[in-house]
Image (cartoon, rainbow, N blue to C red; front, top):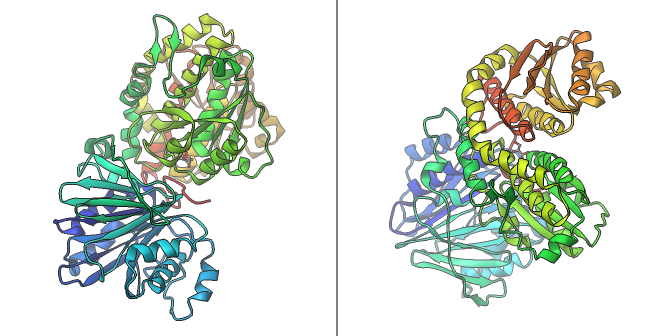
Length: 606
Ligand code: F6R
């Protein structure tokens, strides 16, 4: 969702800005633009609706010189998808790009009487506000700081003015901003992936901070203009991780890569011989571990479903634990109460999701310890939690979340494994989970390699349907929800996930020839009950696909049976089949798999 890049150095800014914007494409956007400043002090602006390739065409016609510039990918919030609403915005002596939302922009616009506004955006109002404060004798830095004090809402911004060539001012409140420090050059990005390959040294700006970036580095200030001393941090990852590596789409790469990435998630955290798990990040004393009797898990979308599956495992492993899994957008506004013996797990791939972040802050206000289950290193959630664990799956570029889901589940499982030791958990069960975790990456690889052709064939067969129901019981229930989400977001087939025990309470009325039903059936003590729903659907002529690890006789239109020594973690294996299925359906339907319509990778606004 919206991306910012900036460059000041010795190289041509246009190319670096364009390649930075391309790296941020995965976040989702509907228009893009850049503004540059040439050596004569002349600023140029180019914007276009649609993909970066459209912007490139505009720049091919009218290339922009200069070694300083800012760029933006916009995901429309205020105002439609038009070139005039795209960023950068130019007002008076100011060029500005902005992520976030200025809540009081209408009130500010009323005050800025002397300005004529070309767009419907809150950003143009902010540009005008800065311009109005940028009077003779005032520096751009001071004008920006003064303006931001008037703003209610969230922002990550980058601003320059031809009146002060050589400097870009950046600031953040609730929307990430990272400054990459290179040799004779400084880069700016809202997402570290745009900096990979340029530099490893970066300053992650905190909320309420502003920085003056020149090619010699960056000076950081508070909004009260106190100079702050800031230690640069190291950016993780490399350029290969943000390339497709021979696959047609990032989504397929990320699904297939899971075997490797899960190794990183598990590395140093499990001891299969001793039957133990250990995470360093939670940073809890033995006494604190003993005192936890309630875990609330917070997330959105796939992260929420990961939490739901993890909660089943937690309850199995930790006998005296109560778990609660909540959707962040709801929880943040509820009058919730948490017992003193609670800990909150804040689950987010991006670490920037606005609703999840808001919950984190609400929970902290109640004095409850928060632990992050986050992928993006240095992200806002990772920085604000009391402790936590990175899931370490590397950049997830495709909008639909796949490898992060699996890693989130197993990271929470490892947390449960640690808790189990302090809460009288069954050591045999703990050892069994640990053993399965140790072989999970290899088993996922086997599953993906073996069944990929079959899932592709199956996808072709079902791609023409308009509707799907995904059904599962017990630990297959969260997988049904996740399977339906994956299918709908990339194939645009209407899909719903249900607990299969709920069929008779409503959804079975839908079964007709426009629908197909996907049953995830586990070879466990609920097998017969799980098959019950399948029989009911088949009796009504429903088209059924079964994903299972059972060897028993099952009747369905299509059955995919996996064969693996994994038992408890079977839902994770079967989920990778659902991921492949959704991928191939989307490809068959000719969709933009990595950037599905209307979706953004990291939802930084409400
Ligand atoms: C689904 C998907 C979304 C995200 C959700 C939370 O494939 O990508 O549902 O899971 O927006 O995002 P994070 O994990 O970044 O907080």
